Image 1 (tube, rainbow, N blue to C red):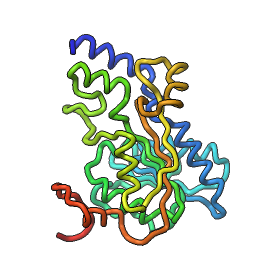
Image 2 (image 1 turned 180 degrees about the vertical axis):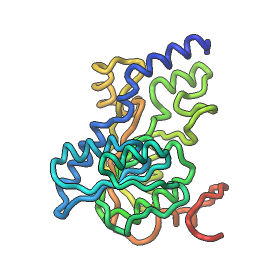
Image 3 (image 1 turned 180 degrees about the horizontal axis):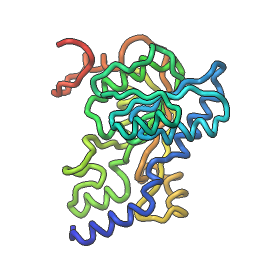
Image 4 (image 1 turned 60 degrees about the vertical axis):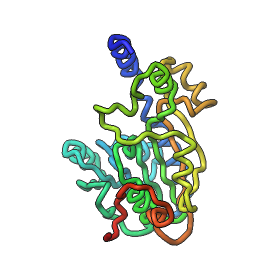
Length: 250
């Protein structure tokens, strides 16, 4: 594609880019689940940034809630701590989450998994720390978004998977749901979309409500199932030709 046209498309995306984070979706799903919890709720955000999603959840819930975060960028860690969030400087892809088994009600991973290789380890740790029936709320860029499809049609690299870029994974709804639900550790309860380039917000909202598969971002409402084992045990039944980290010695 003509470099000038690509730059114009990128400029347009910056106008509504904040909608890609689906903050309202994350907040509403989290609060709906917390309303069913009898004890004081506990929420963990993976790669929380400065804590925007957690602060939204706390504000909307309107009751005491314990907030925790894992982060690796020092300015974000400091900002989150100043906002009253217990935050650890942490490597998601190698560390054992500093939370006891089965003690969390909600885990949020909003726009973070696309930056990671070690999904099996991360999902294993989420499974370990969530209570059975706990909510895992995920937001990721959609590789099958309308603008990514257009880019591929024109022989371009998809915008959410630039080679000289921060993302190392791409997600499409059907395949990601299949991954999440593999061997019954988690169950996907719902999928929603947020934003749709090049449509303005007043048009993109109804479009992605009907067709989340074309949205810029996809959001997954997931429940931890009550079963034994570790999510990473999936790798014992399938050979993927990649040395994924599982927390176990070779």
